[in-house]
Length: 77
Image (cartoon, rainbow, N blue to C red):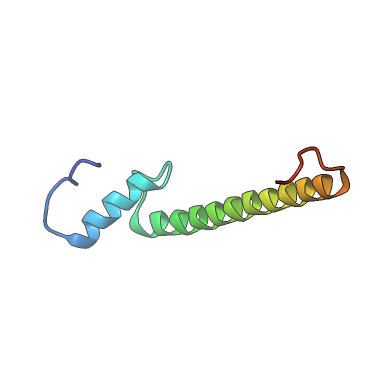
């Protein structure tokens, strides 16, 4: 858990402070720059997730093809 933000008063400021600690290298940015960097970071995370998912599906498809073309090793009971 993160420590409480400095000063309690402005909820927007407090949330921007927390957001700056969640996005890498954004602790000292202005609010507009922080929001811009956050959008870029979210897009990058989404692309990374989609790429990993596609790699997983490709590997699964490859394994399925290998096992469907090879003779059965284990007998079914």
